Length: 71
Image (cartoon, rainbow, N blue to C red; front, side, top):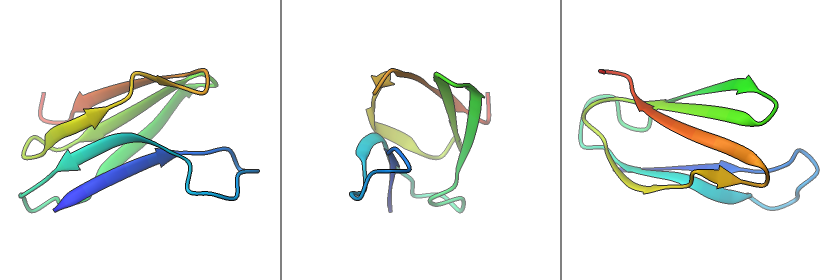
């Protein structure tokens, strides 16, 4: 199963820009924890079973961190 995370402004009409794609064969399929650290830093947490297929490090002035929740 694939999980895709998109970043968009509240005023955007579209689905936004993809910032993370995970391939997750585990029991926590599709679960991503999203935490805004401040106005320009977004942290995405995922489970250890998932493999990152795509990760953006910055989008629209927002720094993006991805962390494995098992670590």
